[in-house]
Image (cartoon, rainbow over all chains, first blue to last red; front, side):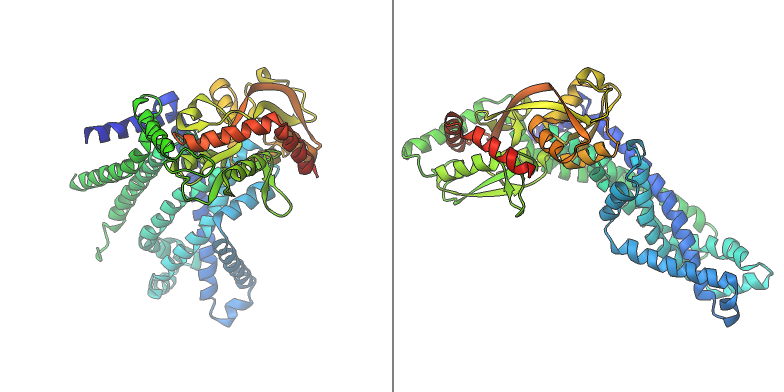
Length: 246
Length: 291
């Protein structure tokens, strides 16, 4: 048993401390976090806009609303949102990343590769976030919108002040699910020669030829996800403080 | 607090389980540098097997070749003229030709498996492939993980830059530059260890590095001169700096202790060198790859 543990420690030391290999993991961790944060922000913005477009189009039930310029714009926007979610959810993230990096942003210098990757992951995440937020908005009883409108708030104010705050509470678990997935999906960044956490483990693995570096990378992801779950827990408690259902 | 300790203990369990998987692989790593006593035991066991069946033409038992009809070679086919895809989608090149000669001498069928370069040593160790032939340089670190055959070619690591680049003239002018390499290759190891002020960009395939060099994302690529010349044949906007940053030798990698296969490989490689066949392969594939 002692030998077993000693072997683990030895392998860990060789894959982490030897020749300052921890620097690879640290660099990878930084890059992974950077891409995740960029992607998260872009994803939420895209998702929110698309979701509101989709929901607004649904509520354009009266013929009068359809004929105005605003109504027309909303329907075009909603059509775009449908197309967006179909294409983005229907193609692999890796394919999107490669097309964006080697095609659309072909001339972007290496320094911006991380931004291109973050953008790519954000565009991808946006499609999923859109559906999550749409589900959240639609989970709020129609009576809430009606109450808001009858209190004299316009459609935008009702959405901002009445519906969205309640929707946020409902979508919190699913949206954190998406954030967690996003964090781990950044691991495909290695395909465009970025050293994220996964590639960092791979680089060390090409020096030590054991799976220990991958275990180390995996553990760092695990710790990040556990931290993220903690944040989710805190947020849920705070938001749920006034909720009688909880 | 209770929740936290639950999480912590869960983490520990996962760590132990995962590390357990990792630990299984460690003996292969450790047995090589310090415990020379154990491998010799294995070798002597093999020798005794060999002594029982002195006829060595057919694969004998003890090294995993017994009863096998296929000889599996691992390689990374983005490295012409050593290995590349031909028009029909087969992996061909100098290494496959050598491997074919080895398989013929053993009376076995050659199977070529294409994989990432940095996976080859692990795959040799796991035994999923019998040997790795991928223009692989002999290094001290690698020699601890696998056994190398006698060398069959010289490896010259040279810089590839854009034709209009006059700033990079050699290894000493690389400081602060972005240099592309293939992950886990000798070029990667050399730059990482010897040139700390160079930004090393690690690619899975050299052709991706070449596309980033022509796009202007990289300042240079460090790679073997022969494949570099093959890339140059297709990209006129690139040039090679002839002076090598490092010279060493290519060899075939087999699993540690598999002396039977290693001996067979050494014998064939020596014959190919003596008869000038390897030079012939080189010429044949340098011409073929350019078309």
